[in-house]
Image 1: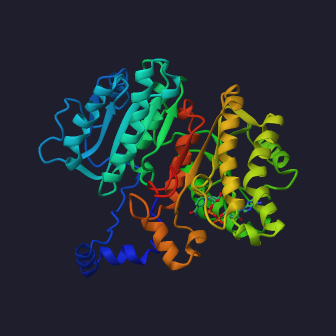
Image 2 (image 1 turned 135 degrees about the horizontal axis):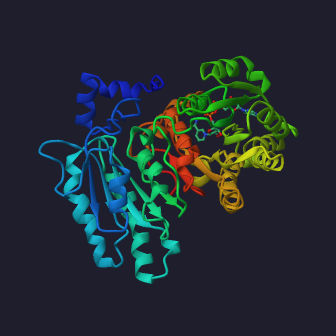
Amino acid sequence: MPDAPSTDFYAAFVKSGPGSFLASRLGLPQPPVLRRYQAGKPALAGPVLLGGKGRLVEPVRELLADYDLVVNNGGARGAEKLGGAVFDATGITNIDDLKSLYEFFGPQIRSLGNSARLVVLGTTPELIEDLDEHIVQRALEGFTRSVAKELRDGATAQLVYVHPDAATGASGLASTLRFLLSGKSAYVDAQVIRITDKDAAAPADWDKPLAGKVALVTGAARGIGATIAEVLSRDGAHVIAADIPAAGEALSEVANKVGGTALPLDVTAPDAGAKIAELVKSRHSGLDIVVNNAGITRDKLLANMDEGKWNSVMAVNLKAPKQLVDDLLAAGALNEGGSVVDVSSIAGIAGNRGQTNYGATKAGVIGIVDAYTPVLAKKNITINAVAPGFIETAMTAAIPLATRQAGRLMNSLQQGGQTVDVAETIAYFAAPASAAVTGNVVRVCGQSLLGA
Ligand code: NAD
């Protein structure tokens, strides 16, 4: 899928001959071009170095058999740049052993190619009984987030914590590694993902991981929602695209483009869940994927905020996503093995001036994920959230220029994200191959300086 046209004058300027000269003389940021997913193209631009001595290194070698793997710890071959490096740190049980991170990654930093991927694999600290091991596994987070800030040219670093009891085949890890070791995670940086001990089946085709699934996307008429509809459909799902009746024409266009169904629907209407349930039960055999993307902002400093602005943001951003899941479950319309993906925001993590209403709802969405993870697990349904940072949409194009430019540059990748970056992360969460991935909040923000 082509990237959205860049509206970033600064990025275009520093890529021009004179602009690039000036930027390097003045020490101005020069945003790298991020490598994104393209069907039929290799997942990464170069080989992946695999190292470490834990319980996962052998299963990972098998899971990534179709990648160009280098497993002798000898670094990149000749002058070839690395596409990625994966280190199994699950064998680290004491402070001295942490040095193996330094020894493995240190010599590779200068061999990384454009948009290279570093991935550290650890054991979920809060599930470890041994005190020393708990401490050093927790330390992996500080290492990963710090090295991510040192990388250049679109490279990223992530940490994946795997449940201590995960089966030796580690099938639940496959979808996460394939997401992280590809252009699909272009704008995801310095994130921590937790994998449960559930097994997961690989799809028949990793390019169609949602084949045969039915997905609902709310707020699908434009912006991030329209791209979510496109990406889920590209991955094989039938998409029901829902948006307010006033967005009718744009909604039909999106639904036609993806060969899906347009559903004019206000998610705050009391019968919204019942209408969706009726549709999926009569035309399909239930719903497999729910993406609660519809969202609004009504910004005002708290002292000046009228009640209407508070109430409307609560209704769309927080009440509706919870109610929809409750109603679909009550109607038996959400299938076992399905997934719910909610859209939070870094404003819900870091807070944002003028957005007390919005920030509360987006933190509340994280609360929905926390609260519903065990409830939905009983039905084999996953729930996760994405928290976008600065994404290039009509919403962010309306921000005054100076603030907008600051928002773009204040992250490790020195640019805004594209709607496709959020959509790819949602598609990863939504896939049946991600059955072991639940209860996570992944920020799609290029490691924004705002928030944790
Ligand atoms: P957008 O305004 O472009 O699109 C939102 C869509 O939701 C619109 O089509 C709108 O009609 C629809 N919608 C609003 N109220 C609805 C209702 N009651 N029922 C059904 N549909 C409704 O916004 P966007 O930038 O694409 O944002 C999508 C989501 O991502 C939102 O939840 C937003 O809070 C979140 N987000 C966006 C950014 C960003 O940088 N753009 C950052 C963080 C989070």
